[in-house]
Amino acid sequence: MKTKIIITPLLLLIVLFLGQSFGQYKSVSSHGLDVHYRIFGEGEPLLVIGGGPGDDSNRYLSLCNLLSKNHKCILVDQRGTGKSTPEVLDSTTISIDLTLDDFEAIRNQLGLSTWNVLGFSFGGYLASLYANYFPESVTSLILLGSMGLNTNGFSHFLDNITSRMQANDFDLFEYWSDSTRVAQDPKHALVERIRARMPGYFYDRKNSLYVTQNMKDSDFNFEMGRWIWKDIVDKNLDLAEFDSILENPVLILHGRQDPFGELKAESLRKYYKNSKLIFVEKAGHYSWLERSEIISEELKNFIK
Image 1 (cartoon, rainbow, N blue to C red):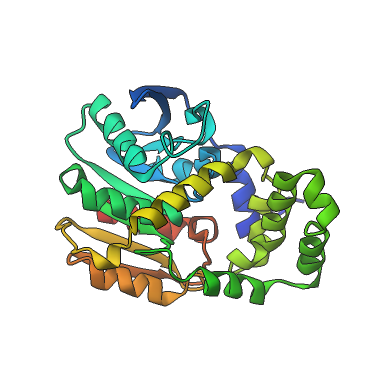
Image 2 (spheres, rainbow, N blue to C red):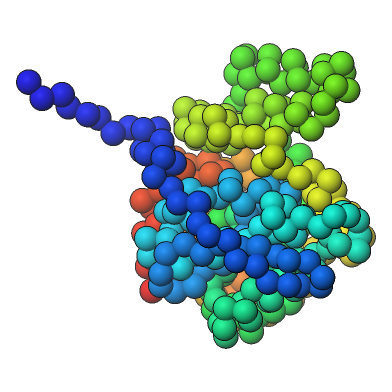
């Protein structure tokens, strides 16, 4: 008697994780720092900018392994993360301007006149900044669950996440909010609070297990994030106050149940003259983990 194996979304995520490639690192010198990146697959070049700020690029290996079936994915260890971490983190080594220059250094090293650029979450905002300052380098722009044109909206982002949490999530969050535990290891306590909130990022909380079971303290550099946020505030980098100058196509992919809400995606659609907005049904913030086939197909058709 043959046993029938049912492939559930969660099982598919596990299979994708076990089969993912970690890639070989390359590096380029940019403003005195060796900035590292990896390349996956073949085809049209696609720069992948992860979220955070301060996320290790390994958090986006599943995204690159999915998209590398059709594209040449270039995954960057952003300045201040992973192998691209300077000895000292301060305003002289961590800034938006330096980070955007790093992307340009990679593009030039690869000999690309232009490339497609994908940004996820905070990386979507960063990708929009890159397209604003270097529009001649961008073939097309893909915004995946982007935080939008500015830092507005984080309060309702967290409210939406909190509204989806269950009793055991709150228990875990409160446990790691205890002042004694925070004092013993502030970073670990913060990572555990992120883990407790993670089910609220998803349409189906079971799918959050892919993230929570693989999350490590080393996945985050919160100090880098603080310097980036300070730079954004000091320079008032609100793209809603800038004229949209990118003429090339823009694809906005946004989970229907993304905690950022639909208004973020709609504001991006209105901002970019040549844009297309697709809401991914039954998907939260990490839409490629819940609707991998849809994300892969939409990008394939858009870039083609």
